[in-house]
Length: 292
Ligand code: HXC
Ligand code: NAP
Image (cartoon, rainbow, N blue to C red; front, top):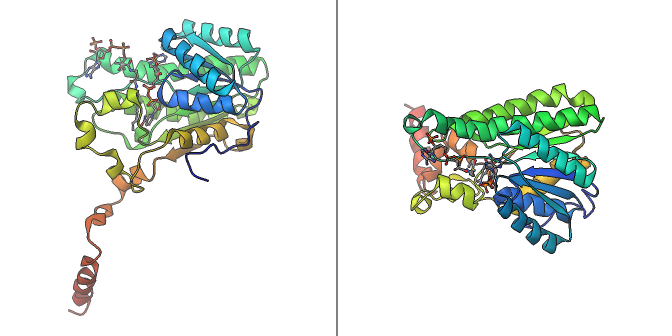
């Protein structure tokens, strides 16, 4: 067994209807594929219908599952409502919302126009709010015990230079996760989040590590486990968190980053650079001070 293999039993999501925003590419596509393999019906949404339809065709062929593609810009409330109605019309209900759509790029903050800042906040925070509010109203009205899973990232709580709009927006999504976990629990609605570290995707890498930045800043070196994430291990975690197996997990944010954010945080973590053979010498120096 390895982390690149599927984890859950094959019927873990049987008859569940799952909406994945940003499901046409990257991590959203990987999670959609695994949900289909576990028996779910999946609605994938983003702004680009052609991309969604190509993904749907590919995943249906690969898994034998059923995918509905719906064009929807999550920034627009009316489009989110229409997407929700299309999903219900096709599959009869919705059980799970995966807020995965995002926008991001690196930039010194002072270079941003006010509307560039807005464009990230609108996709990530307003988009997640639009989908969560729309689906929550539907679940409460119809007494459906829905589940929300939000994809954030570890700088939702540390903050990060050069991706400030994304950090602000993801922090807001994390606050929404924890707030609604309490407020909507009485309706049987669970709300959780995943905070991934680096998982290579074209969408993220083109915008966060353009040109030769990929060679210059080897993401593996930032991770104590010295590797980046595999899409299947994220899909395993997401499938568990939306499944009934995690019925008592509510308001949690699960970090899946190989220890990356803690490596940046610990005061003396830089001592990893000390070669093994130097430790005898350092120990002797420290002990010598004690006897002075
Ligand atoms: C400065 C920029 C810019 C850049 C765009 N803008 N790119 N400013 N530096 N590199 C400005 C534009 O000039 C414009 O400003 C405003 O931002 C909006 O840009 P548009 O292209 O008009 O917007 P839109 O078509 O809505 O595209 C949104 C986008 C784009 C976010 C800019 O990149 C996109 O579609 N992204 C979706 C996918 C994505 O980003 N995936 C990566 C997620 S990775 P004006 O002033 O003209 O309005 C992720 C990982 C997190 O989240 C953690 C990693 C570890
Ligand atoms: P990605 O492939 O670029 O995914 C982002 C998706 O969001 C795209 O499918 C995009 O589709 C969609 N989207 C963007 N704006 C939208 C809008 N206004 N309305 C609807 N959909 C929109 O990148 P990814 O790496 O897979 O990212 C997926 C999620 O993981 C994001 O939440 C990201 O923040 C998070 N994450 C990624 C990493 C990583 O290392 N990759 C790390 C931490 C967190 P369209 O362009 O077709 O609209």
